[in-house]
Amino acid sequence: MNTGDWFVMGVDLGSTTAKAAVVDSGGALRGADVVQMGAVSPAAVAHAIEGALRAAGVAGSDIRRTISTGYGRKLVPGADRSFTEITCHARGAAALHPGVRLVIDIGGQDSKAIIVDDAGLVDRFAMNDRCASGTGRFFDVLARALEVDVEAVGELALSGCDDLEVSSMCATFAETEVISLLAQGRAKADIAASVHRAVAARTLGLVAQVGKASPAVMTGGVAKNPAALHYVSRALGRQVELLEQPQIAGAYGAGLLARDEYLGAAGSTGGRDAAAENQVMATASAVTPHCVDCDGELDHAPHKAPAPIALELRRSIR
Ligand code: ADP
Image 1: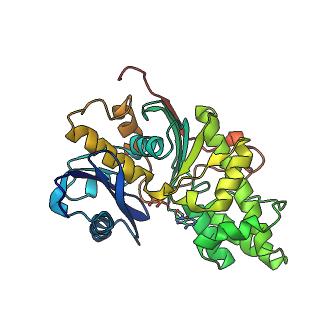
Image 2: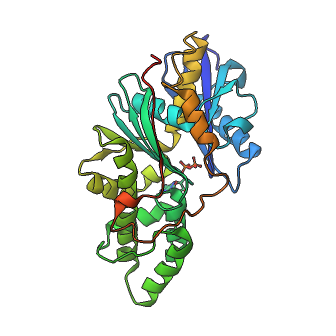
Image 3: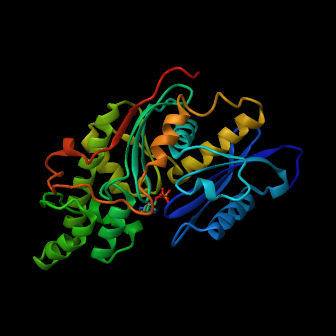
């Protein structure tokens, strides 16, 4: 279809999924796709791009600019430029939920708390990439140990009682602990609920690095887990809003940045201190989170979140 309109694309190559979003000249999301990967893969990116174009009914030749983001953003073929996930999730979330102030992005291998301004620019953020707890990987481990799909572990948790003590917040040991709780005859639903409660406490520790703010939304694949949303809301003491397509918030944000650039607004788009974000992301752990002396008591002491990197971004770039 060529209506004379033009389009741009955002591509988010994460640690577990490739996402692509087609954005039209007015900034509306026209189509998106999410492709599950075994490992970071150019083929998955190509599938996501094809899927998003198909969903939008748009030809690749109608795409005027492409911006990449995500853990593998430098590996996206054909991208004109890349931005960090922090910038792109902030921008995408602000478009999906106008007025949002706090974005909690929980992906496959890291989690971030981002304070956003009126324009969807990053004001400050904190990131945990050092420990799998509080990331999608932790829920993947939980689901595997409970022998349920990760897509179903949230509903299971919501049907359970969350009063079991979860002493290990280390993904390496969590599987063993879950198996041990199962051996004690604990119900799967109760184990799932208690682990979600414990992970939410870890997320709250991350939010404390930037300060609570409302309205709050969750982005990333874990936002599709209804129990994650419920327990993070409960830990925060306020409702975290559900986005319609939380997993593609970063790709959509990248698409909106591509649109800004195409319209000639480059320089006003990359967050207040994109260089500082890039620096933090460059030091983010590669491949999988690694342990940093977790004492296993974080369920009871969320303030001991493992060394998230909090960074005050300068308010100099408007
Ligand atoms: P990344 O960008 O790092 O690849 P994503 O934002 O795509 O990560 O999130 C991936 C994580 O989201 C998975 O590890 C999984 O735990 C979780 N996830 C994905 N889809 C669902 C779903 N339908 N229900 C619950 N959790 C989900």
